[in-house]
Length: 176
Image (cartoon, rainbow, N blue to C red; front, side, top):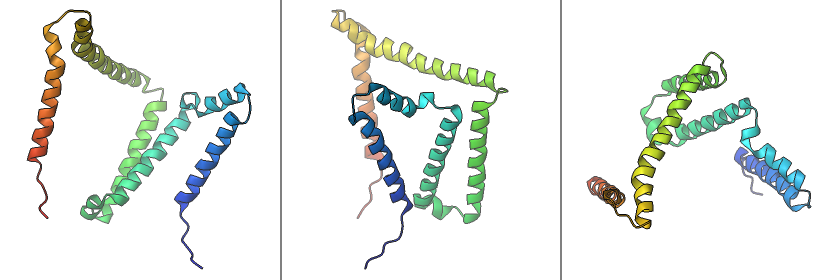
């Protein structure tokens, strides 16, 4: 008789598969559209309470950090075991700060300014660069107008290809 050791990851996949089968039975089980909308309502993270999302992101980041520390052999070899506690405390401090920043009423003005900066930066790149220099000239070309901005798209593509080729040629190759 062959015995294998228990793997907790297998149990997690079994639970996830069971949840998928239960949720799919709602969609394939009948013509009740309301039940399907109700299930999708609870799957949509937009309707979750904020502390659900914060906890799920912290769990995800913690699992990602743990797997990186476990599988990242060069980091593990070069870092003594005494420093892992420092990394754990730093991660805990960052996680507590993020939760405090998101949920605190004291930092609401800071959240607003950070949101404005993020949205302004995104809108700047999308509206003032992408639309003005890439989409706009193509729309003008399709309507019959040729401008100097039409050269920007192929020039950017050629510059990107040139940078990739230069990076690939300068990269050191391992000799077998």
